[in-house]
Amino acid sequence: MLFYTEIYQTAGVMPEKDLVNLRKKEVVKLRLESLKFRNEYGLRAAIAHANVSRSTLYAWRKSFTVGKKESKQRPFSLKNLDPQTTGPKHCRGRKWEYVLEYLKRIS
Image (cartoon, rainbow, N blue to C red; front, side):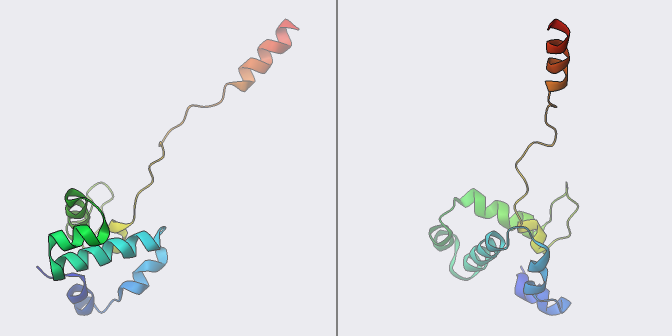
């Protein structure tokens, strides 16, 4: 399997240029380093180095090499390692207008 350095060298793009548009650059750097560490030293060493579980490393590797289908990212893009938002997509609206109208009517 080609790793990110060979892919970036063949494409002529450096990873530092891709880090500009990311939200959490330090997290992406850590994830990329742990994937590189896994390639060089093995899975157990990478788990100890990154202090994450085996399934987390596999998920990072899958999202980096395959891409994310829901966000339609291309494979081997650093945007795939950028953590997504965990907030809700839709929130309940405030009901204060109805409460204020009710209070005006009863007073």
